[in-house]
Image 1 (cartoon, rainbow, N blue to C red):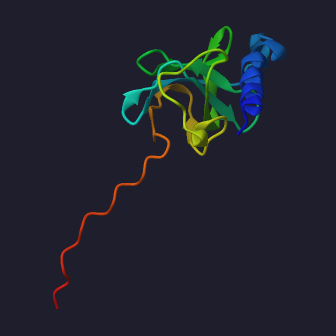
Image 2 (image 1 turned 90 degrees about the vertical axis):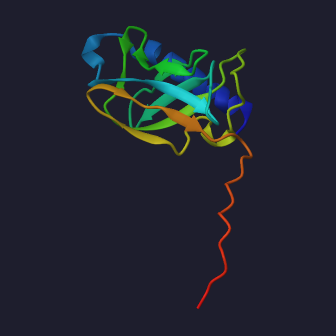
Length: 144
């Protein structure tokens, strides 16, 4: 994916709360979502995580140095719209996360979660770019 597409998605995700207004009357049911993002088991700090619902605005957070995040639906509301969400990641404009984010996780990845009412924790351990699958354990000879 190109940098300009990533930047456009990021800008839309960050501006959506401002464009849609902040009144509570337009707010759907929200679930409180927090968690930790790692890559190959190490904290992924300084990355943007986005939860895209099937319809409506995404919820967004930036991971801290330990990889922890808490989603914001709007400037004044923590949480994420209840229902299925597709997860994506991005690099902040002018920022640099602690590890490179593999292309398969940028913007809308294949990661999905079901957000429910109340509090929940979603941790993600991303697979580093180019990491090969572990080879199968050797098998002994087949005896008849």
